[in-house]
Length: 175
Image 1: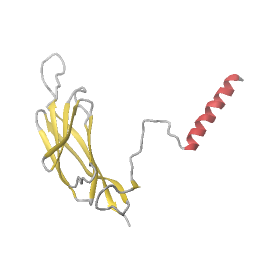
Image 2: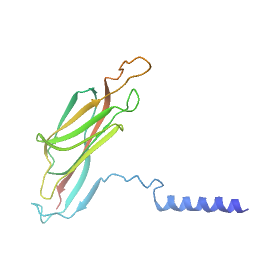
Image 3: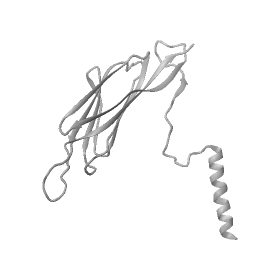
Image 4: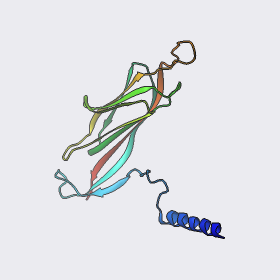
């Protein structure tokens, strides 16, 4: 009888959480889509800005060990406030391929990350009165792709395939 009461109690708690809309995975935060924000000290002083986040680039590629791949894109939105670049890869021999990811704006480096986890991200947010619109380059470098397998010292890993995703948040002046 006591176990039945525990099961019913746990069931009711789970139902309350689900009905109230609380996530069972508290680490997941859904990305913003559109939201209204009051303007800062800029040319839209008497207007509300609608922020929109959109995927602006999605590519797959391959980079050999010790080499870099460049992916160029332009952003011509009225006021770009944030750019996020995500790189993912699955190591074909083990889990230690080392990649670096760099974001450049008008040829100037803005942010860089390096790691062996299979996922890297860099994000740049505009300062007040700054617009990130313009030309960008993402530099993907396969720093090291060790792949020595078995008793013979043969390196079977000479690079890796990857997936790239770029999102941008931009403001459009409202009435």
